[in-house]
Length: 342
Image (cartoon, rainbow, N blue to C red; front, side):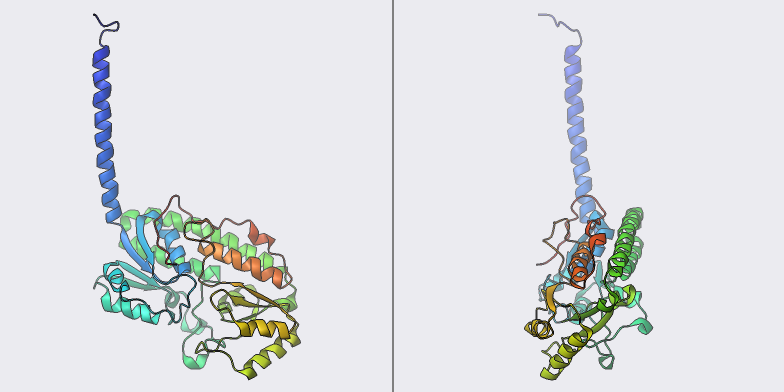
């Protein structure tokens, strides 16, 4: 039998050949992608807000793993011996500094490679003249309050430092990191403006914070609020009866509508203070426990800020609508594979 269309067999053979080439090309591309994955910078971080900030800048071009589980006291966290290998394999170790993660820092310094960089964000974001001290972090102890990131302007400073370090260590991806930083800068700017609008709706006499653990001193300074006290002493013990009585009197005198605890630092003492002073007890503030679970859209640094403002502002008599509709997701597309220990 003759072909109805002369040359059709040739066309079929041509298509088969092209398919084989395409499959072969895909295999080479897959190998290249695997090779790129294996050569990504290995980055280790500490608390989850820092992990989220680093993830937003590094995106899918770094291999990122946090070490401090969410929902634990980062001040007293003791790293496990198994983390020594993680530190030994890291190219870059990023910490908050300002004496927050001393045991983890010691483990990193003891096990890291000679060429591994340790980046301390807090120490490069504020000068000693800008250190803030308070009841939980008294000046007499010499350790400032390390919770800079609740002020998103300082969170942006963290992101800039991360960008600079990643770009210096991985110049081939510098343009990618720069793009992520600019997108992140835009989201932080929106958050900053929304916080200012929300705080302005709080009656001036209510712009005061009494918390169990003081994570809000830099935030308060930035947005015209005042931290009037923190229940937890500097040694993380329970406050004395006298200290509790003084706080009750202070809340009554100021007529504060609410006092604030957190999931990490839940406190029967603070709840009792609120009850005695006829104030509302809010235990939803968090400084390093991101909302939801890893992979959830709101499980981000900016998602944490949005959640905190949604709890704080209405309790003080204000309106948090300005922060409700903000984009708080990651600035890059896809899953970076970042590890957030739970």
